[in-house]
Image (cartoon, rainbow, N blue to C red; front, side, top):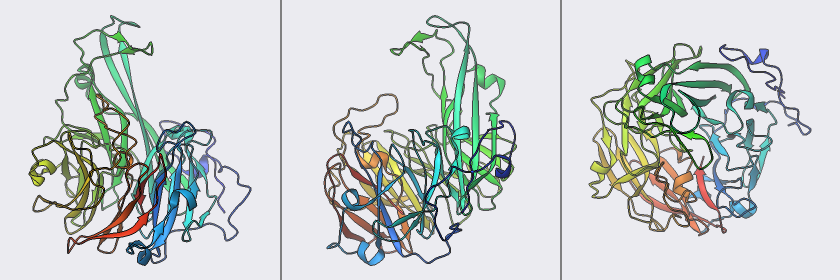
Length: 471
């Protein structure tokens, strides 16, 4: 097997994994050796479910996985209890699970705790049988113990981290704003032969005028590679400090600042691949909210070569999908898909998760302001239309027990739609597990060509738990 552990981070440089040392040691290696790439036909759909922590906080205590065949998935009489009978993926908090294209491997970087930042790879063998390949990589020195990462292209994982530091005239309340500096870190992971192959750290390239006007990026996420594999596009939570106001001191005793409106538009951080050099920011004139998502991949590569990017995940406005042009690698500012307009809704809607499949068709999981539920819609990105689908339990998808966060717009973070991580795709079908918090539900299979919705396997649930992904 491969034993590689990053022992030191040399920021500002791009390093090969061999210069970084070896992996975390394992006492139980896989006897067959390294797992390699996913070279097998799909056998299973893996379902994941979040469980409560020791204090009973719903969905905060880790992730269980259970794999079923495609025939079992479409059978409404087949019962799945991933929470009671599944395999526990390594992670103190809800794991950020990723999967290979054919579904034969799961990948995870553990989230928080003693082993936060450790990458794990699992071979899917059906039901609760998952083989931990022990090809571990410690990304914590680069990405921290709560890393943001995704499969940016098949066999290629990309982890990212950003922070912003404000320079002020003094500490505490009453200080004036001087400037702000935003820093980004990136690590590329070879998923077939797990190791970090490239890493870098740099100052995010705002202009001097922009930083003095308060613009900053404190969180980045959801990186994706273009079709040519020459660029990585990274979603950003672009914010702006109100430089006209003095600082205050928050409840936690730290200096805080008022926010101002974003006049630049939705921003994406772009770097060259594989060098990770030449960072730049591109801006959309069609939308202005963040595109960094919330545990769900909101950027997808279309079969037309363009990248389609969702904005406003877990907010109550700007449910947009933007397009990054395959030829220019910048926003196509003539293009905008507005979900609210496409649905003809009188309420504000929010994209919670979405997935592209082919021929310009995608599936969106969304919520509406003032409506206690979550819904599915097939969208046509070329015709800019949306077709609302009908499922059971859609008026009770788990948004209870927590008030809205006025800063992020997140309502009911314990609900499956808020933490939903992956819509499965196999052949012409989408696979979506839908369970309210602590309530039984079903796996739904949606054919993108016929728009047929099939209620599949029954998903058994338990208090404080919900299903949040299909792979």
